[in-house]
Image 1 (spheres, one colour):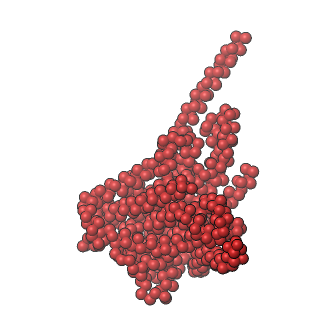
Image 2 (cartoon, chains in turn orange, red):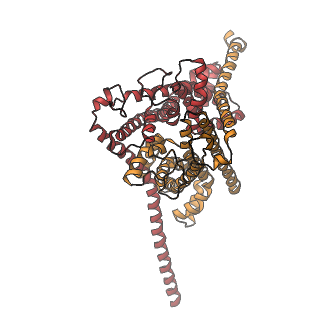
Image 3 (cartoon, chains in turn red, purple):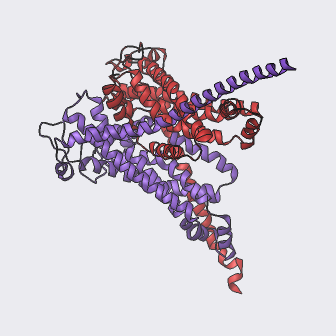
Length: 290
Length: 311
């Protein structure tokens, strides 16, 4: 009967269990704590450098004169253009897969293909952009080439999140629409898309946030690192904020490291803004549809 | 009465016209939507096409034997060598360090979230960990070079200014949430009845976790780790900033190494004319990277499918 007595076997294992649970909690908290310390450090450094002149100046050989204007404006143009291209394409593809393609052969191929594309390292898209858009289609290192490349890069994100959103619309809503004589597109346009809008928007903003932080494919594409002008059209050369930061990190002088920290603070602020917007929109629409 | 019939007939014609129009419109819309889906296929074909084309023209000038057997990578020097191994070694070394950090932290955090955490702690920790994965890699690169390397140099005096260790550790922190969240899904998917069975047999919580839950979730956890490896192999900015640009066939984490991705950045920063051998090396390295990550992803998919079927 001794084996059945809970008092005998449990006390040592209880302590061990507690210790293990503590270890697991530490494993979850430690990286967060580290990130918090690192972020606090960069924000502390960056804020001391952040002023109006920094926002409105072009790069310079002297760190105290340099600013992020070209990168900031370039990032806004590039990301806006990317969204204009990627969102219709991505939402369209998702609607095709969820509402039209069904179990068809083509839909299945596209589906497997998208999950494979999502696993391709972003720098590989840079090779595609360089060879196809910049060289073969003769767009050069332009905003347009960069935006097309980034659109292809974020498309899997848009497609996956849109599909997720479309799936939350109950089948009964579609059937009710079809039963009233609506066509498939009318059902999609008037019922399914409005109902899944919050999810689609959230996914769209996540895709944009991803595009804001990307540097590697743009470097391979050949985006410039020293730009003292603003883009004046789709064919214009450009730089983006992450590339500007990368350029400053690579310089030996301490002043440029400070500039990099200030640039990072701006980049993080932009991401915070977009993520906040995503959360706000989701809540807003959820309230409305309810 | 006759007039009524004609009236109805007219109505029918109008209605039919509208229906035909609507039908045509439906077809056009369906075609447009299909085209959106096909863009993803075109993307894949274009990527493969670009890689195969430029890689083939690289191997027209450099033999496969030299690529695979030479141990030096110096395409930018006068004395050119095209052995891929130094770049592969740099990639493998930094990725191994990253996994060495991410695996214990990610797995333990996953166990905490699924087995020990209260619902409230879970709802706070999960989004917080997502933030880790959402920070741009350029920011992590800054942390590795400007903060972590000088800190590590205090403890490891012979650590080079550019080294594999510091970006490896930072990369590990970046991919830890990925292992955590995918492993947690796998652990969460273990049926509650199996845990209850273990408890009923008198097992404690730890025994249940280690002898029942983790073995059952093993292939799901393995799939998450392998996917994280793929992510580390393809990661660019952290290593480009903090690991250096020195092709180096070494397993010493204190030394400066160049990864495949860093080499691509290095070429991207220079103004390399199309058609030169330097330009082609960009694509041959890219193709090698693509093959590596694709093979790893495939393995991960296999494992996670086995996990889902085995359940």
